[in-house]
Image (cartoon, rainbow, N blue to C red):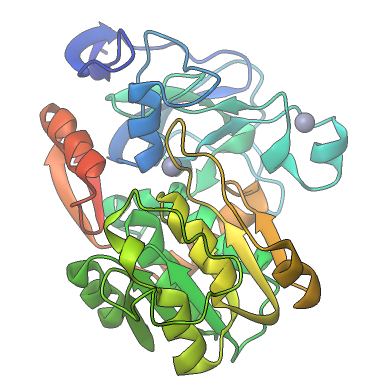
Length: 375
Ligand SMILES: [Zn+2]
Ligand SMILES: [Zn+2]
């Protein structure tokens, strides 16, 4: 076996990734070594590379947390098990999500909320990720991928898929009710499909007609262009809207008014967009008793929303957050995709193109998901 591998490495925040050869990692206690086949490029990777978040990534960093690959070696301490108690074996197709590990013993972990464990590690952020030919991951946290699944189409399920699937569950919406997906990017185009597969009626909101076309092709029942919907000035001030926000192209329009007029307000909304205004508008899209779940993460300095307290109180609205997914969520999310109910729209590119892809994401022009081909 060779001792070095090709990887895309971040040496300083805000600089391009360097394509270079680095040592193949050695699996530690309880780890597996994975030969990477595919790794999706997530908007969080842009935040990691640009150093947008309060807690910076561990440098030098190999980003990437939508990893599908094959187990090629087991570290010490892995006991082969089968049946309902399972651990990966050499040759298994597996996925590595953002949640590299959680502690397993804190209050959050014990309550089935390992997604918010404060001692968790993050793939491609605090631990080396999948923009490389190999990575190691704890056997207890890798997802099982069915052998007949397409590794490239499956890769985006490891973050974009599981994240939106959990967010939809956290809306508490019932089949037949309206769920509005705000932002039809890498996460949103999967959210539309999960929502349809879960039996919701689906509205999709974006500022790009290309992305709305994609939402329609995935079964969205209603699409609303947030840049050209009802003019903000002509509509009654919608609950939760921020009339002073002017930092985005959609500032002069009011998609919430369109949603209220067309479907009487949405029972639930999931915000995968990153513009702060989208988070505010989503509150105003809700019908009384509705729930909005925030998933997208704006960049530095944009981390605030303004909302009407009286609207939230009087209309009994709920605002929740949702972050990635548990291992249970991941298994369910993979199952939807493996059964063909959810299918990522992907473009395969070689590792060498990753900097150009990150630029496309910064501009917001990317439709669907880019997946790095590491075979
Ligand atoms: Zn992600
Ligand atoms: Zn924990």
